[in-house]
Length: 515
Image: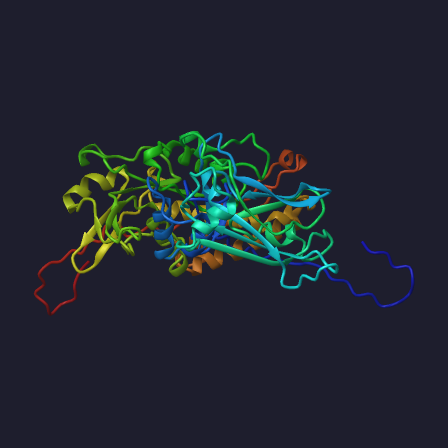
């Protein structure tokens, strides 16, 4: 309570009633896989052009870029991409120099933004800055150029200047220009401030103070390390925060709600993906059948989980590299449909009976009889319908528990749980009494009423759709003495109309029809 020591009028702001609960995002995806280049820490990506700027283009032997492209073309708007690279990979580097007392001294260390031999194709050029004035400032201009492939690097007798000059008939794939850089740390144009966390190619680090002289340097000694294995996707959880990669790094990102690894089957990653989602309990895995999945009679989801859905078969898309049709796993496109359906209809709507944008064909054309075998097993089929295009024609999880049969029910609960968890953090350490219980109940009731009005819950009234209890019936005195506040919530989710049945009979007419 405030103190009142002198006579006067005092105005206080107080809080009464419920605090609003804001719904969490359900459409942010997480992708893992090999890329042409880029950092190995997960990066936030908002469109496919952004992906190309940070990670490069399509990589032979990997479906990651196809999956990310399919995600955005099908309505996805946000995702995190984690680059996977083999163990013992080294990062390309070199030093910029200046001449002091007749000898060269290193002043700035330049490293590629991520490991791999791709960094050996980066040239760094230092020139006088536009605002450089001899004797008055030490400003310089730095240009970084990257080629996917360079000529002349195999000739050890050529200098960096010779090799860069040899690329005159080949435009760089990326050019970054940083003008009027300052070697003074206090300056807003200090080169570390201007370049680091901005460049898609390099990082800079001061070795000693000073401004580098005019020069051309190639980065070198980068290696791609060992072949990629499933453990590289899993990542090292023992690594320091901020240095983790793969699924271990995704544990630090709360925003991810959809998980997809386009190269899942070729690297035997399914168990890792399902385990990750089940442990995190705030995200859902999009699983894909292998390209050679075998006989339909023997096809079944690889895991029994309420945190995953399984899709079959693969789809054909136009390959931007060859402009021919290419067979790719459907996971990235499906994740985009999840995001599109969430945005247009809501997370309670099953992401099925939706057209797969960009799909030009299917690996196999499934019949209704074949889906009769697959659907009860939890295999979500992708089918082509004359005049209606290629559509997702299934909405089941891989769980054998009938309560969690439908994936939209599972994802609705993930949304509700995440929103309530995030929106009630203010409750922690509040006095645990009837006043607090009433405010918590009111907050959750108002939130669930909004959800019911959106059509996500069953019932003609809120009382039929859900209940919220937070009182002496949900807590014992022992719970209260040990600091526990327990809320009981019951929800009646809507289920998808998976089987639409019209019963038609002849009617003589003239009298009212009977049920």
